Structures are given as structure tokens and as C-alpha cells.
Length: 324
Ligand SMILES: *[C@@H]1O[C@H](CO)[C@@H](O)[C@H](O)[C@H]1NC(C)=O
Image 1 (spheres, rainbow, N blue to C red):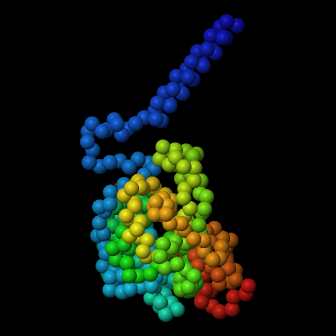
Image 2 (cartoon, rainbow, N blue to C red):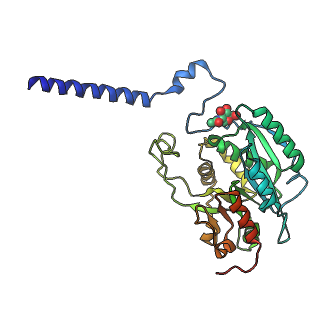
Image 3 (cartoon, protein in one colour):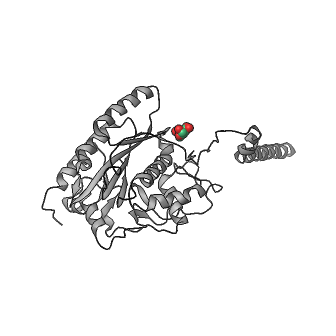
């Protein structure tokens, strides 16, 4: 009996020691450990991204906004290798240049290709751009975890070049865009011309505290339990006064890797709130496919699951006679 008690005591003690060690390990402060060695390159850690604000555009010869003044710019972040997505967009909604009498132009946003064939990849991109002049590329590593850098480079580019244009939509490369419905919304007299951001607005997006979640964010990075409201990243619209405004506050807000949530933090600092679109059915993030001709007649942006689906939506969207 006495033996068993002692055994329990030892086990309890071991667990206590293990828990203490784990606690110390999880709360380790690498920052102060490396401070003595005065590092040039600051590791952003797992939840932030390295956006030192001095990345440069190494491909930037598109005439868009420089020798043209579009009403609407379509900005499409795309992985360097994803030439298929770029080509299908060029053939479908990206080919619509004059919509309801308004100039619309498409620009693809890229970072640097990675991996073993990066140099070869880069040459291919240059050849592709020589043909279309619709790509801009900045010198950061293109990766999923670096999407906030990509978004901020896009914001920098828009602020530097597109101040005279009216609106921009940032749209993912797997999304169907109904350009005419979007232009119609933007031409509506009730649509604000400034401080305007819309899309599928998530008004109460929780900060996820489960370490196994893809979008996990510890309390010491973000203390609030919710992000400020923001339109989901697959498709959001901004008036083109916003990029320059965002850049005035972004240096005060350390970038997190969740790009749309990061923009929401910048907007909040500017005291600007996103706006719901007039109809909930305009932005569809995970709809049931295929969309009916009725929903297709109302949609502005919808995610798709294949190139075929995107193509068929685009073809169907120009056919008359939607039944609702
Ligand atoms: C993000 O880009 C920076 C700059 O190119 C690079 O140092 C870093 O490794 C990239 N991070 C990821 C996760 O790809």
C-alpha cells in the first residue's frame, strides 16, 4: 500500500516536471536570445510575415494605369507556375476590356518562383509577359505563407500607379468574375466613390486559438477574440483612394500571414468599415455547383472547382434569358 502511494507520488512529480519544462519551452523567448548577435534579417516568426517594405518590382512593364486610366482594375494574385490559370482568365473574363462603356484591365501579381527549376521558370515568365504585358512581379518568395506580402505589394503598386483609376477588385485565379455585374454595381449612384470596400463581408471572424488550426493565432500576437470585419480574400473590391491610405497606416501594424484579416486591421486603424454588397448572392464562396442561370445572372464573383467550370460560367453569363 505504502509502496503504491510512493509510486503515485513519483509519477505525479514526473508529470509536474514535464509540464513545467513544456511550459518553459512554449514560452521561450528566442528574440532576447538572439538579440546579442544583432541580426540583419529578422525572422518574422510563424505568425507574421517579413514585409520590410523594400521589396522591388522586377517585372513591371504593363501599360495598365501608366498609359491608360481604367475604370476598373482586376488584380489577380497567381502562383508563378500557374500559367494555366492565367491563360484561361485571359480567354474568359480577363478578355473583357470595354464593359458598359468602361475600360477594364487585368493585371497578374506574382512573386519569385521557388524550387529546383526557379531560373527556368523565371525565363518562362519573362517570355509570357513579353507576349501579354499583363504581369507584375516583385522580388519576394511566392508562397502561400507569403500571401500578405503579395497583397501589400499589390497595394503598393496600386497606390503608385492607379490613383486616377476608380476601382479595383482583387480576385483569386480560381474565381469566376461576372465583369458586367461588377461594373453595374460600381456605376450605381449609391455606390461610394471613396473609402469603399465590399465583398463577402465576415463581420465577426473569430481569432482561432486551436494550435492545430491552419489559421491559428496565439493571444500574444492578437489579443482580441475577433478580427475587425473584412471581405473574404477570394474577391474584394476597393475604391482606388484606399491603397495609398492603407500604406499610411500599415507601418504601424505588424503584418500577420492572413492577408484579408491584415487588411481589416489596417482599415480599422483608418476607421473605415467594409460595406455589404446590395445582394448577398453577389459573392459566393462555396456555392453548390453548377450555379443556376438565375444565380449566375446575379453573381459578381464565385469560386470554381475547375477550369472547365470557370469557362462554362463565363460562356453562360453572356447568354440572355436568365430564369428567376
Ligand atoms: C517569404 O519571402 C521572403 C522574402 O523573399 C523569404 O525570405 C521567406 O522565406 C518567404 N517565406 C515563405 C514561407 O515562403
